[in-house]
Image (cartoon, rainbow, N blue to C red):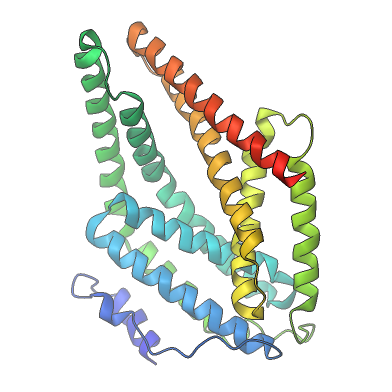
Length: 303
């Protein structure tokens, strides 16, 4: 009932809300044999995390808040995909589309934030003759980031997104969501499948040659496996600490390599002073070499 009242508030006026509206009394997750109940509780808790993150984002449009909403939406979407055989097909499709669109809504602003942060880091301690040019580039990045935030602010307060949040809530709280006869007791099948998928991921990491184009796909696979493993560990009670540590490290390293490539592409597509461009490329090369070495060390340990 409390969540239903929240849905009505979301469709009217969010300016009067604070986080206390989102905090409900929750029981600890049910683990073991009662799989449908445990899954429903997990989904409802993750949905509340998404609501809280969204409220914080509405208040500030800060980098951390935007990232928190993207992570919460991505985690829900990934785990729903893992459970799709046990979820009502229509509800699954509706949730997947809405959660996907949240990621797409926030992607341009998140990319502008990451680009500004990384280029500012690369331009620390520039030679005096390049200081003014570097500052002009950072101003350009700040202007682009402000423009993205203005667009995001307009979009996120629109009726479309209030309706979407209410729709996501209705799907997750629907009695139909997990009312699929195929659902089985316990989590033994999921744990075996996770072990199999993790083995395949490790095997891919240990290939002698991995093309640059494969790194982003590998990162997304690792991220999805991590979110699924976190849910599985909570629900089953199985300690997956070692596997999660590997997946987080893999995601961080491949994320850095992906960001490096993205910064290079952005720099090539924009008019940057040749001297400053040479400095950026040299520092990007150093960063790439460092992260590649760490990635190869991780691959060696996996072997």
